[in-house]
Length: 403
Image 1: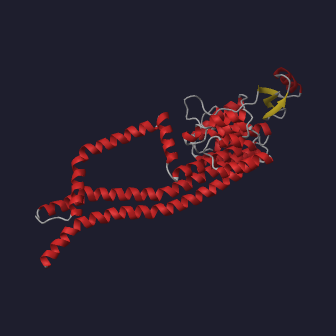
Image 2: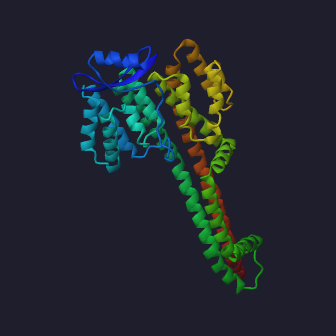
Image 3: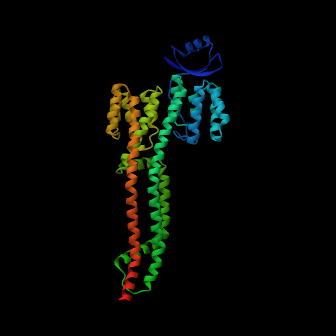
């Protein structure tokens, strides 16, 4: 039977090792005979990240500080420093007060004999995939390599989110600016012109009459429609935070043309990269998928996790279990199937993630290039219509006087 042991070496270091033994009692005796001090012995398990009631699965500190800490920790471990000493050094140099207190707790936990992965997990401030990666590094004795792999994984996800935000920011700004312009024209400019038209008994063009009537309707109903819209917005905000609300919204987003496919591609890239990171640390496929699926943002897609894990437990091929979800792209399934049959699943999962990252970047760039002119033309058309409606009567009056 395999045990995970937290032991103190004769040189004063505290290390974690995976050791085979018949029973825990026999293992304790063996370690003591070899001169080790035994702090903790447990069977292998995937540590949980958060305590009950905490924001499970979310990083509770700034991403930049978190990445810098892991890079520094990896460098210290690679230089041969013990874990406890490395944590102490980084804690003293830490400027982020929240991370400082977290590291202080981690240091105390390690001193009491808790494994590094458990020490981080007990703070409830880190994603489960991070503490699981630490556990994999402890088992394999390659914490420094695991930390670097996790840093690269996190940087990849952060870059993908940055590209998505960048692609959507300008179209959102155009829509907001256009709506503000139309609001000003409807509630202020048109009423001023209406007063001018009211002093003239001339017949108004149809377009002008329609625009003026719309403006009057907006002004008349603004006092009750405004608070109603605000109330609906507040109700929607709180409903969105409920489990049923979030699930309904996520399922609705999946049904949208174009955007639904983008969400599936983005999720495929994130899921396969998470799986590759965990499998590289020696974690089993079932445990890796259980952890990686927790990071899926869309709850409609996350709901399929149970069926995939059930398929793996039943001995079905991983590709077949993924195909049964109905949302993984066919090309991704083909690539995963090749990797599974050839014994290079982890490497192929990395390739799938890289492919869909690049594909998503290309599609988002193309979508942004298409959306921007459409928004400009549509909103420009509305503004031109309003301006024509306002100036047509004036042009008619001038023509009448000239005539």
